[in-house]
Length: 330
Length: 210
Image (cartoon, rainbow over all chains, first blue to last red; front, top):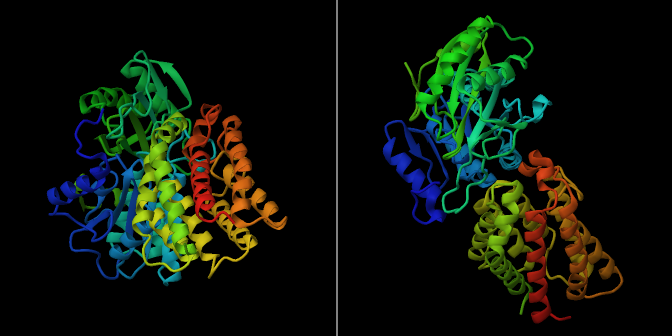
């Protein structure tokens, strides 16, 4: 249960306030809007990457803003997409005159609000592109209808790195789409999460069970299973992703083992010890694996595995330096 | 009472009824959503009421209300209800003298929501209340009913539409991923829209009986 809050109505604003106070060395608040941008604002002549979505997923979205990563983030109420007006205001704040890419997970509220903001910005003559993240293999067999989960991290990193090195809007967009096409995730959950101010968790999982393929907001997954051992969980996650390798993938993949909030680093490392062996045995070269909390769901118990299948160009963008509140690459 | 004030009064009543029903809406949304529908609607209508002053026509009040709602509420409901109010307002210019004028605006607003949400009646959304409401309103208006009389007579169809969502499987939004889980529970969006239409009907009845 989320226990630290004052008036739940003020939660987002107070969270944003503390976040910007703590990380003023890398980011700053966008004035009169629910969002943050890289400290000092956009760089003239560079494409801006504005990421965003509902709250409750830190470090998504504000934690991934900074040099080499997203130019800005628009941040909604807990699990609620930001409004079109907020997307619009944040886009205006991060615009460097070379076009804007909106990047976000594929959820209906986000699609509506970002699309409305896109229409408005286009009417003003700005060039705006949208890159939707659709990495969750559990959510649909139709690749384009899938929702976005931890794969956000890799797609945003590629977009941000491309924009920061000065690529054109067309190139940034194309690389972002390629990153998304090459990224797959699958997750499991052991327990629900509670929205601040609500007495009940959003959903529950029986103590001796787990949910396979559960979404970031408790959307049920493909099946309920008895609670598996770490080795069995790791086998399941690896097998799911190896049975859904995107066309054109090579043998090298960036790896993210993600904790959803209440499944901790030590548990994730236990999982990774087995995942690493399994991936290697399958002939996959794991590239700079990341084990940690990069896309959370408040205090949800669960974890996911994400693979972004690399080519030379995507790998260079993964390697590019970045400095954000939650992620630093030297 | 002039039409701008009357419209503002309807929106005040909308906020009151949403606050009154917030727990029920939260419950309906928790079955297949994240339980925040009541809170989002309340956030939206609070902003609407705060934005009310300074408009001279019903259309202006509604257009401003739509912008305020969508900005404050966020999420799908923010976008859809905001778009509905905004389009309704933009299609009502000047003084409303005939019930049919409102019907045209209701249709435009409904079409805008269908387009934005890529959905239609039967998908288990707010449209399941709005579409039968607008149809019944239009029929009453063309049969010669006053605006208030047409509105009140259409509430029955709106209610039936809302109740029909209980037996539907959601096709749009977060609850669509849950498929059968939404079966048996009324759609929260269809429900809150019905309460708002009903509250506005009460205001019309007491302040503008003709």
